[in-house]
Amino acid sequence: MLNITLLTVGRIKEEHFRRACEEYGKMLSGFCRFSQEFVQAEKLSGDPSDKEIQIALNKEGESILGKIPQNAYTVAMCIEGREMTSPQLASELERISLRGSNVCFIIGSSFGLGERVKERADLRLSMSKMTFPHNLARVMLMEQVYRALSISGNRKYHK
Image (cartoon, rainbow, N blue to C red; front, side, top):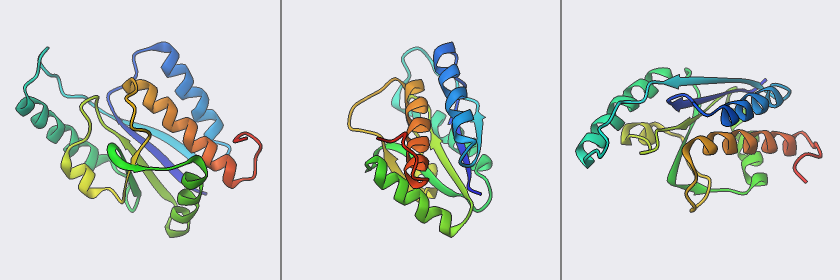
């Protein structure tokens, strides 16, 4: 069975986003072993400089790299990544599952991911060219993974 880990920076504070993630987590458990891991977000000043942001991304990146499951195919969610349709993501997850049983999706802070994390990634994936609230992106990714697994399992959800 496929093991999917969602590794994120920070925890969700808004109840509605947290409930949505819990619901998709339950739905995903019918297709895979799904888990969420968190790393602490670095504290920044109210108007951080580029240097301060870079230092924070590097520190968060070190924490992320330490939590990636061993032998996991790693997907870094980043704006410069490749865009896919839901059926393409389904095919990609099928292809990945043939290589091994661990997939780790990584979502950084609202400032993104450090370069070392992106360099470590087997795939850089972008949801869209549009900008979304950071916590909504978590929900959207979980929904798309669920949709992809539904497609692969010939379930009707994706229609």
